[in-house]
Figure (cartoon, each protein chain N blue to C red):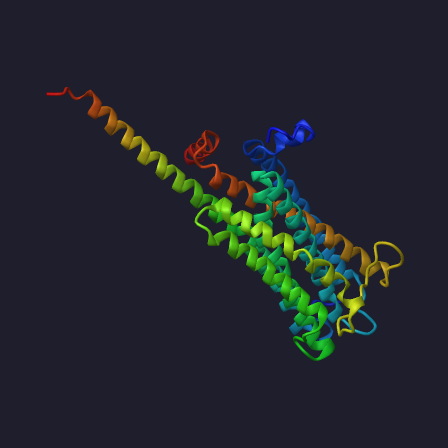
Length: 68
Length: 254
């Protein structure tokens, strides 16, 4: 069997290959989506931790200033 | 969960988010590797080794992705329905997450089923679409998945949204046997089952093994995709907890 013959799919190439393309495109998109979301979740969490850290140090510095 | 002493201890522990997060992290790459290996062998068997069909020529080769996807569209709905039931009755957070994160994967497989079926129907039946029982019930399945996803995200409170969506998932489970038996119950353009678990399959061995192997590959894929999604969701739901903060800071350093 030649490659040409294989790719032509007995004349049904216009139906068989798009079907396989949809299968792979949809599943690859499904696999990538949570990866992107995971990165975003962790980035947002780190930003929140950083903000809390700043607030904490500010609160600490206030409490150490002597009251008049 | 004080009254759940009948649940085995290991299962009880596995239900705890940090433990399941680690467990899923170990299993996921193996499931993905198995999905890719079995999928590649199945594709080679289906597209290259299997002979052309005596009636449908090479167009029938769509079966190697269409039927496994259709099977997964129903299987995942079943898993989602069971997890939704457990989530509603026992209020187990992990069951809720499994149910909600199964929905997008199920929707993906249902979409693939409809599109590949359409691409197969055009050369064989002469039409992209027909409103018969099998096709219509599969379309309803897609809408049910989209409804579950939509309802989950429609609430401000995630867990409240999950409970509403879980309720819809349980009601919608009625549709699964309708999809499955539609080819027997109604007169339809769609062909009957090619494969039978009990009894003889109407298919030659050279065509059958790639199909069965592809069904296995899509199962492994589901496990891999579900576990990645569940891990991400657990991080998001438990973001106030120390174990998640630890992961966030560890990954920033690496």
